[in-house]
Amino acid sequence: MGEKLEFDNKNILITGGTGSFGSKCVEWLLSKYKPKRLVIFSRDELKQYEMAQVYSEKTYPSLRYFLGDVRDGERVKRACANIDIIIHAAAMKHVTASEYNPTECIETNIHGAKNIIDASIENNIKKVIALSTDKAASPINLYGATKLCSDKLFIAANNLSGKHKTRFSVVRYGNVINSRGSVIPHFKKLLKSGEKKLPLTDINMTRFVITLDQGVEFVLKTFTNMSGGEIFVPKIPSMNIIDLVTCMAGKGQFKEVGIRPGEKLHEVMIPKEESLNCIDMDDYYIIQPMFSWWNTEQLKLTIGNNGKKVAKSFEYSSDSNINFLTLDDIKKILGQK
Image 1 (cartoon, rainbow, N blue to C red):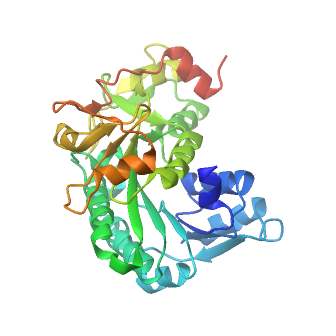
Image 2 (cartoon, rainbow, N blue to C red; image 1 turned 90 degrees about the vertical axis):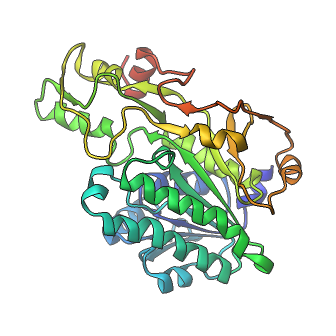
């Protein structure tokens, strides 16, 4: 019921609306809710055209396609006019590309975040959720560092909103299965081209994984639970990358190529340093902000659940996760029998 109230008859803006997450989010919002206006904000005119073939404004009169770039502050402000809710999914997210094009990554992920914050406050947006990544926790690559900076900007923005009452929160999760640029479509393409052995950066590598549907569902639920200032982290499974290779190409059918620039052997979603402010909510975690204005009692009222503090030495890492996908689980994801 709470979710219905959040999205029915509301004006919603999705940045990066034609990307993997954005497209799936549009599908959910149109099929399960009745938004008053749903604005798809992205910079790729071809993707907007292709998306409009599936979701036309004629069939879905609440839809609006808005061409623009989060780097352009004035354009962002125009897109945010009369909006109630923002889902900020636009990002430059390819690790290697970010290492070689650092300025572009900074412009999109950091300056773009600031533009969203400024436009949200100026337009009295009620709630904003920014999508983050496990690579923002203890980052070693530029992409992760820019997303950490973006997260900090969104959390601190709750200090700036003042009388406008705009509230900002962040959702942090792992690798999205079958999203654009992810490893499964890449492996499928290689196998289709005749490759017998798949490239494997390291035989011991692990990753957190989540499906697009799970990601969208978690983000939408978070709007009901947020007070403003939290980082929400879902409890999701890990996967041994060697198991994925085995399911797709067969046992031993790989060639070890070494870790790429900016890549980790294992990913962390909650480092030990953040455990002091972390609450276990059974199926997800909340990392509370370290600001004097934060009200833990208000959080308890909002979520209707006290949760419990994690141990001071707690770390949520892909290699020590208690939930790992089995070979059968992976085969099911791949559509294999």
